[in-house]
Length: 84
Image 1 (tube, rainbow, N blue to C red):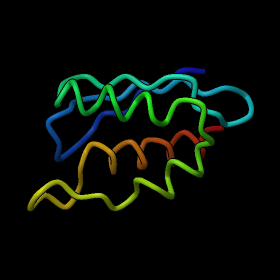
Image 2 (cartoon, rainbow, N blue to C red):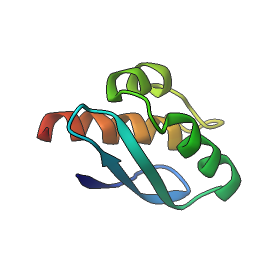
Image 3 (cartoon, rainbow, N blue to C red):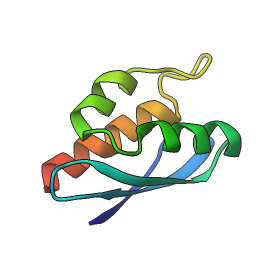
């Protein structure tokens, strides 16, 4: 199932997440933001369980901002879990 999440407080604007029935991430695509970094994050989380990614990325900040693209991904994954 593919989910979308509108980000706030980051350079990226939206995240698309494809998750299988076992809560394993199949694919992540960011719209906007730093392409190289976000492509790398997407590759690193592919094949991982939702809970593991949330645990690793939640609370990550970007400079003086209280959030970041990785933190927004964690928030998006929490929303995915709520709708699972």
